Each structure stands twice: as structure tokens, then as C-alpha cells.
Length: 284
Image (cartoon, rainbow, N blue to C red; front, top):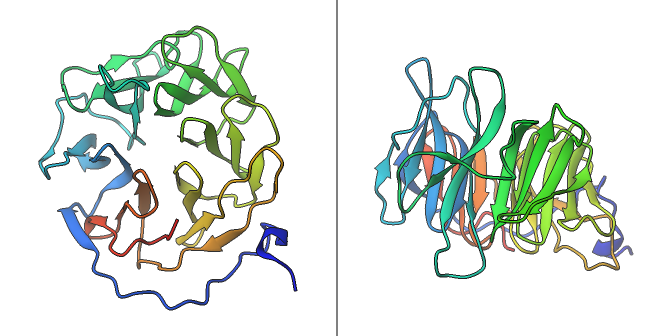
């Protein structure tokens, strides 16, 4: 009989336990919410407004607001990240890509606690590349660059010059947990060390979206709307083929998912709006 760690990713392990009754909470009615992000108690998503889209923010106290930021022609895909290890002066930023009138895409940041105007961050925004699909934890970031010499997924740290390319893929999404970076390409999902060392963990799920990561696991929505997750990440010695399984509970019509510090703290979107999962969709 094969052990779980010997199963290849191509065979999704099925979970045969009974799912507990759902008491998910509708936090914000938002039937057209897209691309949810979650971190530090804040949630953010894109919502249609007029002939474009705006970013909407839900604060930890439940207040929902639309920051005074320029509108987007297409739905932005935001992420929430922190700027450093030290608690003092650590900022919690909403990151998203914006294209200017010349067609150049750069990563912009909005300070969730302080508010104010959006700003560009050195390293995540350059004049030499189009930057999209950023993610960041504790000042360590990943971003997708295109249009220059060093195209692909690159990693770096705020306040330090230079980046490291970990993939040549022009990925559609990235997710970071500080030490690892996940990204979605046309070949599936890949998870690598931010340092670029070691082998990538590969998940052959082309067409996946809404990738989210905690320290030890990743989850996403697979084609067909199935919420899936990995086993715990291995150390440097493997295994290098992850076991993938369907989440034990599958909300009907889920359109996006985002995790907080653990998979016991999950928000998701469906046709009604932004919901808090209770019990967790994923037991991490």
C-alpha cells in the first residue's frame, strides 16, 4: 500500500472524512467582488464601478471603504504585504499593478493603516520593465518582470538593490510567505525558495488561479472551481512531488480565496460577496 508521500501530484488524493456543517459568515455583500486579498486583518478586492474598477478595503473593525485611488480599466489583482521584520515602523501595504498612459505597468502601494496617496516602491517598480503580480512578506518580495533583459519572476528585499531571478516564466500570479515564492504559469503552479536555491516544487495544474500561501502550505482554485491544497512543504531534502488533494469542504460557486496567517483563517468570495469560512475550508 502506497504512503501519501509516495503519491504523485498527477493523482489527487481524495478525502473521505465527513465535512462539518458550514456556518460561513457573509462579511460584506459584494456580488461582483474579484481577486480577494487578505492579511493583517484587512481584506481588499476589486469591484466594478462605472466603466472601470475600484479597490475596496475592509478594515479589521469591519469598516468597508473605497480608498481615493485612481480607477482601473481592468480588474486589479491586489495583494497585502508587510514591509519588514521589526514591529516598529512596519507598514501594511496593499500592492497592485497599474498601467500608465504610455503602457508601462508598475507596482503601486497603498498604506492600509495610514491611508494617503498611492506610491511606487523601488525594486517593485522600474522604468525598464513592466512589473505585475507582486507579493510580499516582511519586506521580501516577488514580482514578475517583462519587456527587458531579466524577464521572469524575480525576488528581492525592500531597501536593498539587486534582485534574483528564480524563473523565466511570465507568471500570472505570485504568492509569498517570506522564505518561499509560489507562482502560476501556463504549465501549472511552482513553489521555490526565495533564494532560488534547491529544486522547485511543481504542481501540474494549468489554469489554476487565486493562489494563496501560508508558511507550510499552498491552496488555489483549480479549473472547474475546485479548491485544492498541498501537503506541508518539505525541507531541502524533499519530497519534491507534492501530494495535492481537494479541500475537505467545497463552498458552492467559490470565485476567490485568501488565507491569513494559517489555513484556519480564510476568506473567500462567491455570488453573494466576501465570506469568512467557519469551520475552515482547509485544515492546515
